[in-house]
Length: 291
Image 1 (tube, rainbow, N blue to C red):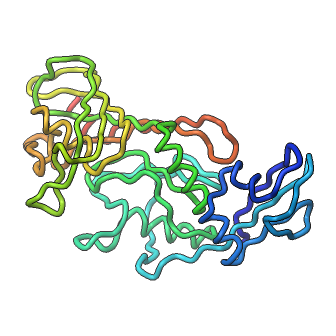
Image 2 (image 1 turned 180 degrees about the vertical axis):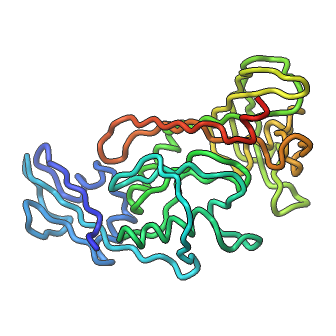
């Protein structure tokens, strides 16, 4: 099993520790490299972070092999892989499947199946899911194959450089064709599951564009500018247009038996190459039928 590694080229005379920080290696990642079996090589020789680099020195960071937690069982199952390389795995998740195991659904999750895939492919990593989806929600999920890659993707999300767009079917006809919902979201005081718009909640912003209107419901495109739990569901319910099938937040299940939400587009900057990557996923049959 070959450990994950990255190679950088120094652009001038600088302390190795400072160069690593500039390349996005966090203090936590550096600590795991130093104390958990990783190595740092300069021109093939192992060094410490106090080493002074010279221009054109080749720095190779060999990350420690990660061990999967005992709580995540590897299970066989289908995976619809959209994209894969040494750093990333993009999956098109079906509806009615957990992203990670839960008390109600301890097995059969996407994480269980990916853990088995990592074992079969001898990928030396535990699971790092950068973009989770609710059980009912279908579409694109981004998985990092290394803690460092996960960290870099998290920074992208914080800096709003990662774009996620969803298609949804909502109750009623919306008054505006394009608008943004900017309302803070927090946990509902009477529930451990539900969220709600509340003054003391976390900032949340969802952009909405109406694509087409039908009798009693509308097809909309949504862009998440933040990633709060149940954000889309809460925001749409708050403005009086809950998702079809989302009975937790006021939607009816007469037309579809799950919340009508699908992550159709994902755009990100590749953490190691710097290239812009764009992925798309067509609607699942149950939503497509209603169009």
